[in-house]
Image (tube, rainbow, N blue to C red; front, side, top):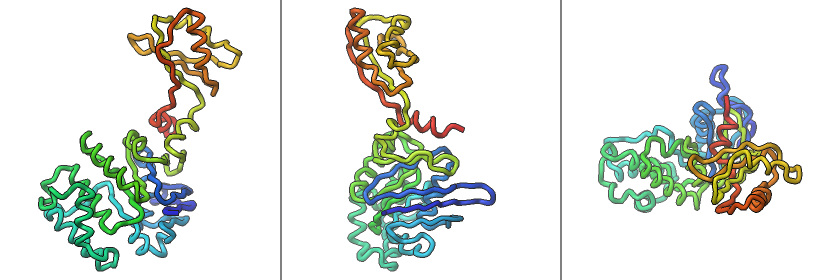
Length: 313
């Protein structure tokens, strides 16, 4: 396992930041960590990067214990914290040389010069390498932060809110960069942007009040959490809501559904509280009423809806 957490609890005084958290992350997984503010995401990341110890429980990275073998853990982890601490007076290449020399002395980088050139190319910083970090945009500063996290070629990358405060174009750039890196490394990243998790992560973990409330492949999470079927149908003619009631009694398998229509259109969203696929019944309704179905598809519950449902106060 790249990351293994067994019954971790972290107390700050009497406050439980994490409570009995367990998870396993395999090599090559890109895992999104979702949760409201104060849910415990950053606390978990700080434990895995050896910044703070757990109150109880065990955690290991690449087989090394975060308490007993913290130096070995740090050699295998690249970490970008939320506040991205940088030396703003240094130039980009100068900063990476400084970090590289420190890690070289710790035997983490055999030859920092060749590695710096490689990382500058990977993060798209070649053009900016002779600029002072303080003059860079926030998007490029995030790239510098990623560059220092990647400099010693870690097996595991832990990113805390890597796109926080970026504009839409910068978000896409960093998102693409993380996707590229994720082809070769295990990544855990926290974010408040659910679309990022859907776009980048093959697995999603949702934390609420210090506990894991969901953990599954991102594409499966909606299906597992959803207990209803929603279909979206567009008719060629206006259909009144009262006429749709005839759909409910088909084969006595469709329970009463809530019906909503997109404003100013003939598109209806039909929701059933069972797992029965109601598309055949909707199509039969159209045939019986002389309607043409322009489109008919099953909608999955959005990850955002799943998140809201699981993290209600």
